Amino acid sequence: MNKKLAVGVQVTLGFLLGVALNAGFIWLESMRLGLVPVGSWSRGFDLVWFYTLILIGAVQLIWQIPVVLLLRWRGQKMMALGVILVASLTALLNATCWGFFFAGKIRIGG
Image 1 (cartoon, rainbow, N blue to C red):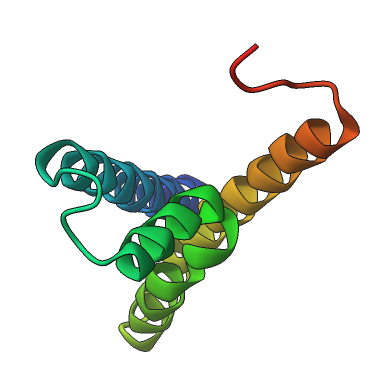
Image 2 (spheres, rainbow, N blue to C red):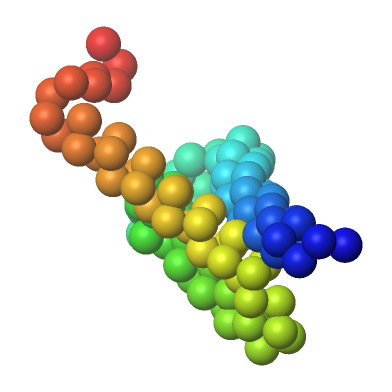
C-alpha cells in the first residue's frame, strides 16, 4: 500500500473516532435529559450537565486528551492526529457559535 494512502487512512480513522466520541457524548446527554425529570436530582448536578453541554468545546478535553495519549502510546500517531483535528474543529465551532450569540447575530427562542 502507498505510504501516503496509509497515513490518510489512519488520520481518517482517527477523525471518525473523534466524531463518534462527540456524537456519543451528545447522545448520552440527550438520553439523560430525556429519562431524568428536571428537578429530581440536585440543582447543582443539573447545572454541571447544563454547562457540560453548553461548553462542549472545552469539556471535550476530558475525554479527548486520554484518547490521544493512549493512541500515541500505542504508536498510532496519525490516528491521534485525526482525533486532535476533531477536537479542534469542535472547539472552533463552539467558540464561533458563542461569538455569534454574544454579538447578537443569533437569538435563541425568538
